[in-house]
Image (cartoon, rainbow, N blue to C red):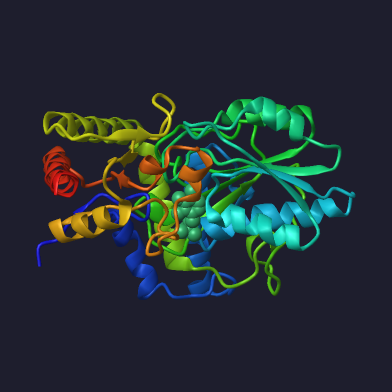
Length: 382
Ligand SMILES: *Cc1c(COP(=O)(O)O)cnc(C)c1O
């Protein structure tokens, strides 16, 4: 079977060959438990230490500030619940987030509301950006945490993270950001960026699934989510996912080393795709911010069509793309991100997310654009 053109890298990415190579010994002879003191254990302990250092380097953090998790979802859950519970002891019970967060943050906030916390969901403008004045005015004396994502996974809009962080510092409120989509694209330096907690995920940067990390600055008090062992400085009990962590370490190293080149390549693919769409005289609108965006995520609407029909046609024609987050596709539900952006019904209901990544070529994205022209032409004029 000829494989479709893969334009769904915001959902997941293929494993880099060097990552796979780094992982293989840990699926084979290097099987020890890192907590064992014998030779088998020590070899694996060293590999985890190295991976922690690789991930820390990618953020300019200290290795001791990295907690390995099962992925971005667990990192987000740990940050929100861990800080909320720790701060409750000081009488703080309020959190601030945005309406366009990943469900790993939004659903965790719903859970915390159920547990007696109060959450403010900041609205966004038509480009998907939060308003820092809104943020300022929603901070209360009992606010424990602000959680605003770095770059959105559906429309790619970048938030004013530095400004938000500065406001959080000024008000002595902890600040978490979900940087799962931004890591490997944007330069993230936690020594300069005023963030206290930051989530990243392995499988979005050509690493294996089931691994991720939460960066936690030294000031933060965090209640663990898992109990039963001394792993991850007692913040995350359980025998480590060794192959996953080793692969994640390698992926983080490669992502940091190739970041500039990767950024340019993603921008070129995006521009080639848009250029070809225009040449093919496709009618479309870009959803998201026109300057402050992640170059690998392109959300387009094709007025006069609808998302579901488009997706079915793209699949048949050999283009793998998405309707937004992988979690909401497969249902008829409209994206909560596009809803929050208050776009017209026509735009909201005809949106498709194309997301580029390592391995995509210009020829491929141009081909995908021509397929888009063919599909939209057929759907609109029939
Ligand atoms: C993919 C994604 C997550 C979830 O990460 P997993 O490793 O799949 O659990 C969280 N936030 C954002 C922005 C994402 O894109």
